[in-house]
Length: 311
Image 1 (cartoon, rainbow, N blue to C red):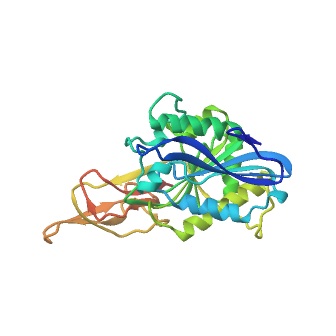
Image 2 (tube, helix red, strand yellow):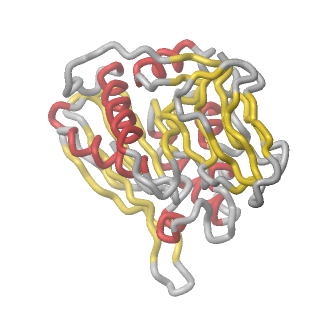
Image 3 (cartoon, rainbow, N blue to C red):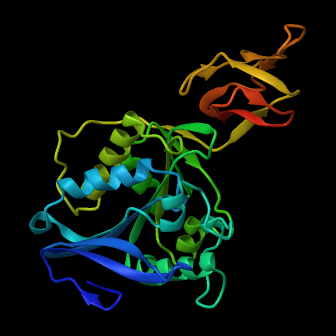
C-alpha cells in the first residue's frame, strides 16, 4: 500500500502526515493518516471523521476501532483519517478558515480555494486508493441525531454494505453535489455516511454503535474477524424524512425523544412566549420516528425543530 509516496509493507501500521499548507505564522498543517496494512490482500476501507471540525464523535470511534485491529490478523488495508478538517478541529468550528464547508467542496481542485485543495488531496491520496468508505458525522449545532446510516439503498452492493453496519436506522438518501459521498459515488466506490449525536459532545451510545458498526462491516468484507459475538441487528429502513418547522417564534418545550415513534397529528411539544400569554402546539404531519431535533429551546419561525423518518 502506498500513500503520499510512503510504502506500508504487509502486516505493518504506519502514521503519516500529508502536508496540506501553512498557517499565516508559517506553521505547517498536515493531514494525519493511520494506515494498517494487512498480511493478506483484501478490500481497502477508509474511515474519515471531522470533515466538519466540530463533529468529534467520529474521532473517538476511529480511535476505538484502531485499538482493536492487529495488522497480522487483517486482510486488506484500513486507512483511517480521524481529523480531516484540522483547521476546524482546532477552532472547534464546522468550517475552514475561509468559512467554506469542506463537505460541499469535493472533488476539489489542486489550484482552487483552501477547501478545494484539501478536498482534492483527500480524493487523490485516500478515496482513489480505497474500495470502500465510511464517513462519520454528527448533527450540526444545535441539533442532535439518532444513530443512522445515510446511503443509496437502491444500489445492491451498497445496500448489503449498509445492512452489515447494523445501525438502528437506514435512510435512502440521494447525494448532494460537492459532498464526499457524491464524489466517491462518481468513482464507483460504495460509501456509508454515519450520523449520530451532536457537535462538540461525546455520545457514548453513538460511539458504541459506530465502533461496532465498523467492526461488523470489516467482518462482512472479510477483512477482520468480529471481536465480539455476532448478533442480528434489525434496522428500520426508510426512504423519506421530513423536518417539522416552527410555525411561530418563541420558546420550544419538546415532548418527544430520539427514536420515539409518533402518530399523525400527535403533539410533539408547544411553543410559548416568555410572558405566559400564548401557547402553540407542534403536531406531527405524518406517522414517523423522531430521528433528530433541535437542542435549543429558542426558535424562530421556520426553524427545523423535529426531524421525522416517515414510516
